[in-house]
Image 1 (cartoon, one colour):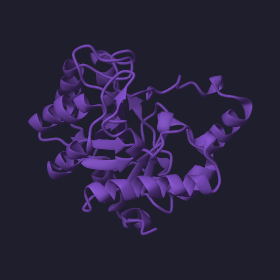
Image 2 (tube, rainbow, N blue to C red):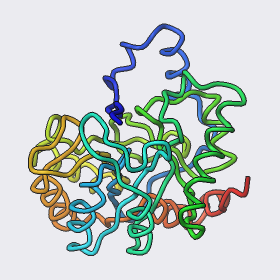
Image 3 (cartoon, one colour):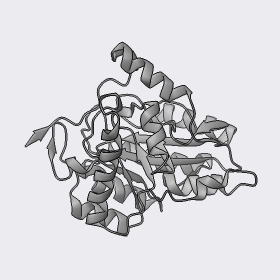
Length: 273
């Protein structure tokens, strides 16, 4: 079966008027405010939809550098041949977790947030959680990423009950006043980044003591427009060491930032809903 999992254009201006308004509210109305600046700059590598190449070649490269990533899984896509890649299967989820990588949630049906409303939001979240817990009961499942990078205020308020954070694709660093339910992230894709732009992002993160999150999809020599080559990922990992950025999963970064004196204690808590 073929499905299409590639994100639409990340420019929200191409959405309908109502969808744009909901998206902008999600961007600018915080529901989980926290201070993301810390004493140590950091970078997190995240993969959405999780093509099998990200779970294999991507994970192997990270591990060569003593690093681990956060993989956001949409349950309905497990094992599926998508339009640009094959998605990881249940066995790969178990294997990634056993190797120390973080498994996050990416909704179950992988629909845009503005198309899922009301009770459907809660149902989708619980369905994905139940499926992944059925695969590996030990999965913490503490962090989320919006399908297509698009959020709404209704989603944010519901997600706060279930997850420590939710990641968008708004292309900025995380520092200063932030919303844990709308984390910023930069694309680690050959279409949008090269070695120079990675280095410049690291330089800024080091200067501001910020938390940089990268997101990508497939990791292969000829990646889709939404993925990266092993060479680009390898450069990003080596450059993180060169610029003095700690490489952490999303959950480890949140724990470290929340442990700072004066930081909100709720960030350390695991949602129980």
